[in-house]
Amino acid sequence: MPRNYLLTDLSQIPPVDCPCGQARRAFALPENTAATVHLVEIQADARTHYHKRLTEIYLILEGQGHLELDGERVPVKPMVTVLINPRCRHRAVGRLKVINIVVPPFDPADEWFD
Image 1 (spheres, rainbow, N blue to C red):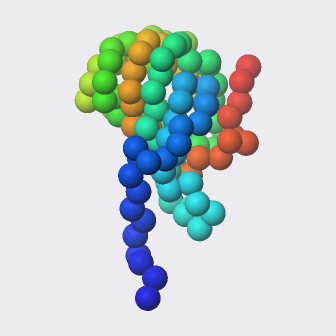
Image 2 (cartoon, rainbow, N blue to C red):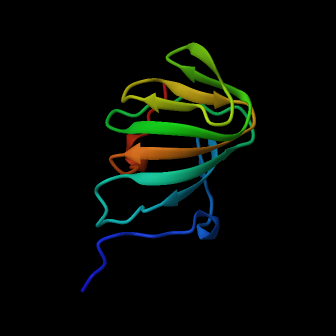
């Protein structure tokens, strides 16, 4: 009988480059239509971007800095969470480690830059 859950170890997923730095993307499977979870390490100021369909939830794990959200600078620190709706232009500023929950699952075709 197939399992009714998915399990992964983020530390075992190879990082990939993204506009925010490097991301380890869990549950990025064709059969998963619910959400993906990314461990993102931001080492330099990220590039401003937005998504037309995706909602992102950031949970700051480490570091201090800012998120720029539609041009507003919002200070963040560990255990702060931010829900970023579709079409909100955003980027991270500073050295941060975040968990990013993406609903529906991340789609690289839905990254837009001005």
